[in-house]
Image (cartoon, rainbow, N blue to C red; front, side, top):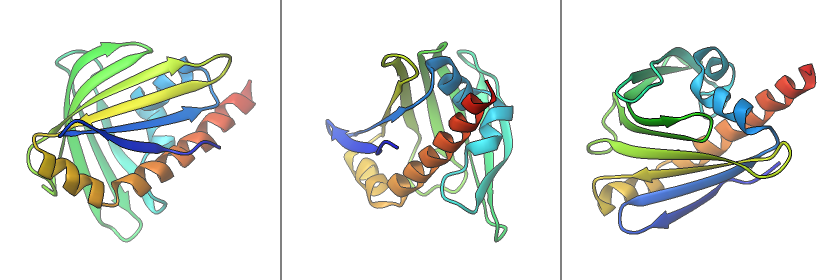
Length: 162
């Protein structure tokens, strides 16, 4: 299992990288197909994705709603700016519960790193250094790391079917 690496770049960006033991196409599909996302996405244990609408094209929108076992909801969505399957997706992100100002712009690069190894690099760009720093102080990193562990489990199960 690989570790999530979180760094900063410039005043307003967070860069997250993570390797996965799966082919790039499967990793891309896991991030972009609603039926697959619902099987793994949701962050920390106890959360699950109950709504997942994706119009995967430039100008298309997406909407997610995650629900915790205790009934709490967390919703968010945005607009796709660029889609180059299976290697790159650029989109905005704004949460229903405004826990940071404005929206972020996320560039997700999915790179093949040899046979059945895929590197996912996500660059999160915020409106200000203060917003970026607030996100860094939140439980975002642990939530993303747990989500990636769930993605590992999903990918392993999918590969075992073949």
